[in-house]
Length: 316
Image (cartoon, rainbow, N blue to C red; front, side):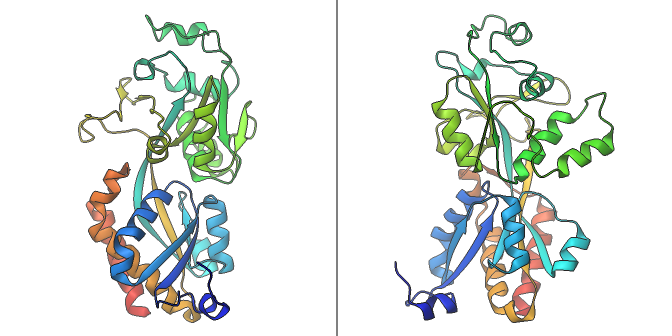
């Protein structure tokens, strides 16, 4: 739909719908749009969300180029105060690894954390490597080169995946793990392909034989990719295959995704509309989020986020 300049300036369609613009993390894009389709008409709100990565979302919120930013990375309080922003957890997502190995039952593949780390470090370069075969007896892993697929953009998913892989590495001190998690592009030295966005990872893994990439469960489902089972701290494996019980089989790699909203008085009305939309989604959109492959926030976190958003609505 083509908008007039006046409608764009007001942030509304000619119909009177208030259109909000968000920029940021690609992980929550599916659930944000599902919520907009379901709740937007009743709230009189439309949503345009551009999934350019967490770094772009934070920059857009700082520069007031969007009504809110989306981030999979927590922003330090001092940084929020300096930019006059509020940060609110909205939903959680399961992250993991997907592979493209034709003729191999991916549901049977078991890769331990140290083996996945060795793949992304470039130490294991073929699927027939003896270390991978030893952990997968009876599975015919092919003589096929491994191509790791990583994010080129500044991504909270990259930081979380890298921090998870570094956990327990004896030569890495805890403070070094934190520094690695905070790096803009943690997989900069990984041999393989660097692409933009979770959709870019999914598209590349789906078409490239021998590839492995990290992405969220919702995007993996959207592209027909199965997530590998993930090693737990006790040495067993968690699964996200249909029929599993999330309460009994907790997934070890989960990120909370957040919105970052400007607090400036001049933007109070639009920020209040953002808060009103997401508060409604928090209170009424849990089932829709679960259907999209997302993980509910703990009750205490959800209630705190809803209360924070209610205060923003009142200020508007």
